[in-house]
Length: 427
Image (cartoon, rainbow, N blue to C red; front, side, top):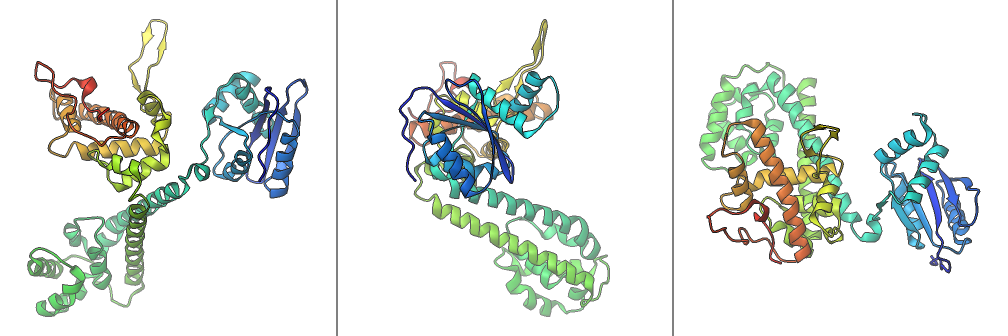
């Protein structure tokens, strides 16, 4: 595709309201008072027609849009490929600007295109980074698919734990230890009812369950314990060939399939990011494993594009916001106007880091809760502070290009590590 050549300094501003089947376009050309409106369908011919129309202006083109699901991705990829400057408009900013401009909650597509154009004119837009052009599309798809599979696995396990096991084998819950383990679901798939176990003698049951249970410490004692528990179970005496157990086995098979899918995604992510320099830097930070690193790279992209860590904190929605009016000043809280997946990842990484023996995250957490270790509100604030510290740390690690080193900043003369210098990478 041929790049559009620009010879003029004046910009052509274009506001596009995205929808599934068609897009409303509003064009403000330099030197013309009237704005041009047109509607294009989500087809190759109409998109090429729009590209040719904007290229005829022979001026730099800046296009603003509001992200709508994933319907904007194909259009913006083609517009960005020919050299147009793409700007993203926040949905919240759109709603507030529409109410201010029109003094009404009324909403329609042409009006939204007008609001987007207004945001372009005042420069209140965000940078749009196309994942396919930036080379992060595969990372994003792996990360999002892993999240979908993990959520499905969790929901299915809650169904097993809250519905099936209380009916057929309520005592079996205590033998489940690890959500990543496949042996427990495989065992239930073979013996969905304790009455099937009680009908066998102990030696025959140990021989049948030996391969299913897998490698375990004190394996014989574990299987014997399961056998004795099954003999005294209060589970419903359902026949082996009943539809109820057939449905139970179907759910168990689905759970095992989800475990295999999650393992395959994790192996693929490890192979994809094995030689990625940013991934190696991220995994040097306590609490960040391959999946957390995958999510950070998928959602944030290249962290070097944030000149200061406060910009990255704002991107994550972990910047402080305060409600103030006249003499009233509210309590400062994190804004949460940012990437929710990044916040969740930083939160879980911080929780993992404080469980390790020696690192600055654990040190900060312990100092934070020293006044009252059992105060849940104080502990929640401490986890939030550790998550913000995690964001600052990974930004410093990526930007400096050096791996994480705990307590590198040294200790103050009084023997206490300054909070503002608690964790930083080598600069």
